[in-house]
Image (cartoon, rainbow, N blue to C red; front, top):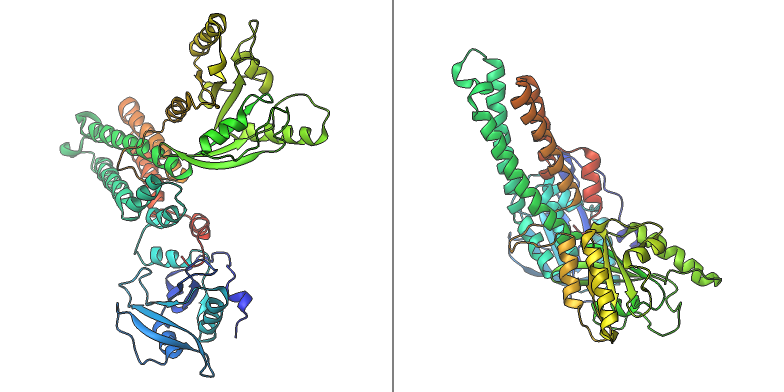
Length: 483
């Protein structure tokens, strides 16, 4: 019998092929721990046979739940529960699939899984169930990734978008674009092979140019949608930085809606980075509070400041928080403060200036100073938001400006997307731009055809029509072993 340790251990994905269906795999498909139900999934040619031996039943009816006891080899009962049988190809993987629904609990699930291994099943690799579904044409790569994205979603919008991608909406858009590309390629290849035919004189009649430009426009639309989908899936990493006691920790607490960071009047209270994930206006923010940036002899605080500077270099968006009553004087500006704190002025697209304690501005001179600073900030392409972490004034505006700066405005029917999807779409656009230039400037038919071929290959990577084995291994290897 396989050991209980081996029963719950994941192994690297092994790049199965069509013949992998000869091996029956099994894995726990629910989180280990105390719970009402624990599910073990089997897939492969022997799944039904193993279920029959395990329960003492002669056969199971497809898509019917059967209450059974699960027996050890000596006849003792391991557990009891439901057995569901999905006969291939009408199953998730396209193979015979069995689900054993027993009681939740680490000991019971591992004992049952060990018994399944004893009967001939093998431990599933990470993502192998979904890999087999892909291998048997039950889903494409986009849908396979959407499974993991739905499980890992951090907001309702992200979960909804992942389910739409899982249902095939994103794949349908990509497949439609592929059909357009193939159609254009056919005309170009025909014109090259039969140059004497008048009806395929694409170099002068403008038909291919029009079709090519139409395809470019549609890919640009899908790319814009995919960018929103990537933001929905991944969110953005936001780092709060500034001088000590500027209000960074107070801002983190205000955005998180709870007291996550310790706030005192003592400079240097925050000595290490503190992470918190929140969802605001549908956008997931991975917030990092940092130690105040200053010169110090305190060894522990210096380490915290070094970690703060590391976090700053890795941030998608940097919020420089400053105290309007103290940090900026008449002879300096917020942009000069930013340059002092960070060594150089960050790009406008990744820096948002937060003027904290704006509720404490008591006279006209102070207010005029802030107004003048904002004018300079705006003229140089930067943004500043006046807030009060104490009262909450300006927090809603801060979130709106932040979403605007990162370009987050997802449509109601947005689709989840990943970085590799954006990369493939951008490369497709690059090849189409080359094809357009070869067609309109140089009238080089063979080069147009080659650029279109490369565009088709790039676009096909998204759904898996053109994929390298290492890409497949990376995608499915990120799954849990029960998927």
